[in-house]
Length: 192
Figure 1: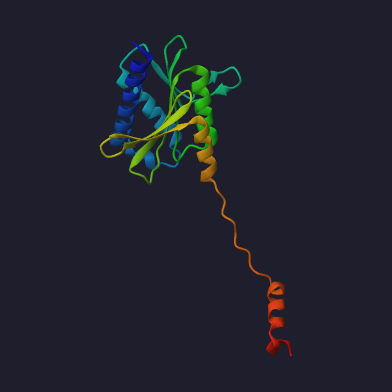
Figure 2: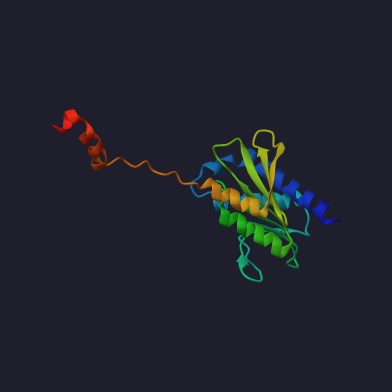
């Protein structure tokens, strides 16, 4: 089986796991500490979807890299330690640092790597698919689980777009009374 075929099977298992999570465990979305329970449920559902003794889905599994240790929220691997898929997720949008870690993991391990954002106030999940030189952004509808590709950004473009999101607005400064006094002094009626 080719890498592309494996990625399709893994992504389909992930999509089906999200669908089951929304259908059967929606109550987990409203809990205060949802990271652990949701991660566990998705991992269970992915293993069930894959229905194969060839793959395991573990949570918070540390993987040593050349320069750092990675801890994806979920990792799908074989019993020999070969990573097939890594999944990162957040309740809200991923930060630039989180996207960078997922991208670095993908580059180093050459493993199918995705991340997703739950976005509780939206009617979709935001999915990030990391590749060597770009990131794909897609939406999966919570209602019918249809997929829509939003955009593809090069790695550099992706980092720049994060920086633009945090643009700070300048506060308007009040004019000081001293600045307005000279104008009043020029008025002959006021200077007498």
